[in-house]
Image (cartoon, rainbow, N blue to C red):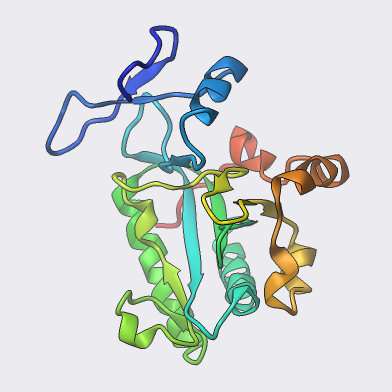
Length: 225
């Protein structure tokens, strides 16, 4: 926790290789959220919950476009991944990264992060094979122009992803906003899926919380063997 963290702010152990006693802040209530929002713009979280470090209950694919590719190409890759995941009995939910790309989130029964990472890598490789002109599973920058990097690495227990609804630290802050599959399917221009803080109340009124299934144990599915 940052220096000066109030005693009433909850923290939890998050062991690190260099510090087995490390702790991080847990935001569970409005007071903690308001305190944290006065310190930072962006919130990032792992794919596991407090009390079970390294045991993921969701999987993430970070679709990152290399110029001149945009979120339009990310949406095309997302649609392929959605169909592929459905073939394994898994449901995917989309949100913007709040930057240039798109995130797909998949609710899972608690699974070791290493197993989730291995499965996600396999699907990223399959995406590259199925969409060779569009998708890429390797991080090498020389390969990135015009393609969508299917980043599976954020499933590692030690990594974090921009939290749903977080602002992003940009000249004009944008939101990592949940989106519908109709919006993903209909995306035809780079600016089509850009949302700001002032957009969110109306979107919540219209759609509700599109990512609510991620917090519903009934929606969690086992990772395919």
